[in-house]
Length: 176
Image 1 (cartoon, rainbow, N blue to C red):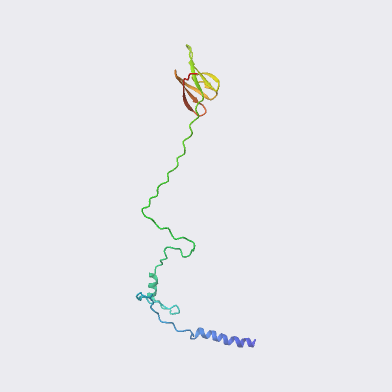
Image 2: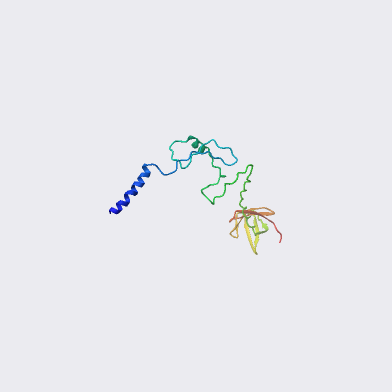
């Protein structure tokens, strides 16, 4: 233990002497003026980074305040980020036309054929209609083939309404 104490005591004195005493480091270099080759020398004094001088150098502070970062608008903290897009002036964007829905398909044609009519005194007029070999006799307001309603009877045509689609169609008189 005495041997360890004998070694530790000189080391401790050596360490504390550099803190409280003079340092073996070189004295600080005087502030130097720097300029790039071919440029005039700046009027600002730059302090050496080795200086431990606690005085405030307002000229150096003012020079650092005037420095502006100009890196082309790139984010220096991201490698993969693309440069910002260039702003173009006088560019007109044509509005995209709103597609209109297609019109609904027309209703199917009424397949009835008008062959004639019969009328008796004091009775409503009756018509003869044919569809696929079947003949129907109807008066105004009747429903034919459970789908078609006779709306109006004229001398040369008849107005038929499809009850399922509310589509009306005039059927002309045809000769067989």
